[in-house]
Amino acid sequence: MLSRRKALKSLSSLPFIGGLFGGGLINSEALGQHITGPVARDLFKELGIRTFINAAGTYTAMTGSLMPEEVTSAITYGANDYVNLDELQDKVGERIAQLLECEYATVTSGAFGAMTIGLAGVVSGMDPEKVKQLPNTDGLKNEVIVQEGHNIGYIHALLNVGVKIIFIKTSKELEKAINDKTAMLWFLNANTAEGEIKYEEWVKLGKKHNIPTFIDCAADVPPAENLFKFTKMGFDLVCFSGGKGLRGPQSAGLLLGKREYIEAARLHTPPRGETIARGMKVNKEEVLGMLVALEMYLAKDHKKEWAFWEKQIELISNSALSVKGVKTEIHVPDYANHVPSLRIKWDQKVIKITPEEFRERLRTGHPSIETVGNEEMVGITTWMMRPGQERIVARRVKEVLENG
Ligand SMILES: *Cc1c(COP(=O)(O)O)cnc(C)c1O
Image (cartoon, rainbow, N blue to C red; front, top):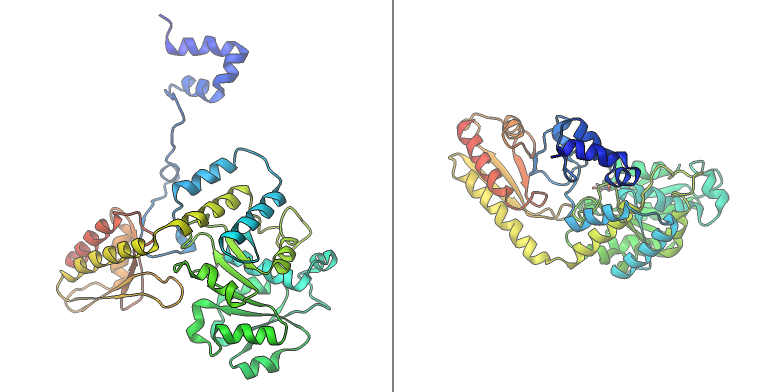
C-alpha cells in the first residue's frame, strides 16, 4: 500500500492536483508534520507572551477590548476581497448615520484619529489646497478653545493639525477668547465635572459665534444613549473609540455629526496621500469590523448586561470581604468608563501586603490577572473579562489577601 507521504508526493507531481493541495500541506508532510487542515497556531505562546485576564478596563496598553466573533468574522470576510476604499467608507458612513440618527459618520483610526481629521476638516473645508497645506496653518483659522479642566494628553490630536490651544475657564473668558482665528470649541465628556461650562452652554456659545463644537466621548459607551445624545444636542462633531465599550477593532473609532465637516475630514484620509492623516489609515477590515461591532452593540440587552456586571462585581467584592481587615466599595464613574467598578482596600497592619505588591502577585500568578490601583487601593472592573473569569478573579483576590 502506498504510504500517505508517497501518495502525496506522487499527487504533487501532477501540476493540477499539486496546485490544488497547495505547497503548505506538502511541505508540512516533508517536515514530518501531519497537518490535515488549517491548524490554529498559538501565536502568543510561540512568541513567549503571556495572555491575561483583564480585570482593569479598556486600556490601550492592554490591547483594549475583545471583539465578538461576529466582528472578527466581518474582519476575515473583508480580508478576502478587494473593494474601492472610498466607496466602502461612503456606504458605511451612510449606514452608521442611519443607525445613530445623525447627519453623517465615518470610521476613523480611533477617537484620537477622529479628533485630528475632524479638526483638519473644519480648518480646511473642501479646499484641496488647504488640505495639502496642513499642518501649516498660516492664513487659516488655527485656534481651538478648551476649558482648563478639560486639558488632557489626548489634545495632542488637535495639535497635529497645527493649531494652538487657547485655555479658558468661564463663558466670559471664552467669549473674550473668540476671534477670527477661532476654528473650533473642543469639549471633553470625561471631564464634564471639571469644567465650569456644561454641554448645552458650550453648544449655545458655538452657535452664537458660528464656531463648530466637538465633543470627545472616547470612553463614554455605555450608556448607549450617548451615541445619539450629543449629535442631537447640537454638537457639530462627536467621536467615540471603536475598541473600548463598543468592542470593535481597537484601531478604529467613529466620527459623527455634520456632513460638511465629515466630508472635509475624509479629504485628509487615505487613499489620498498628500495629507496629515495618511498614516491614520483604516482599511476595509476595520471599517467592516467597526460597523458590525456597532450593530451588535445597539442590538444588545444593556440592562441584562449591566445586571450581569453587578453580579460579577458583587461576587469578587464578597470574596475579598471574607478576609478579615478588607473593605470594598462598589461605584460607577459618572463620566467615562461608566460601569460597575470595585475598589478593594485593607488594613496594611493586618494584611501585610501593599496594593502594588498585591497587583504584582495577581499579575505573576496563574492565570495572570491585570488590575488597576494606587498606593491605597486596587481597582477592578469585569466588563472586559470573558464571562466566567470573575470566578477565577474572586478566588485569586482572596488567596492573595489571605496568604500575601
Ligand atoms: C481612549 C481615549 C482617547 C483615544 O481613543 P483611541 O480610540 O484609543 O484613539 C481619546 N480621548 C479620551 C478621553 C479617551 O479616553
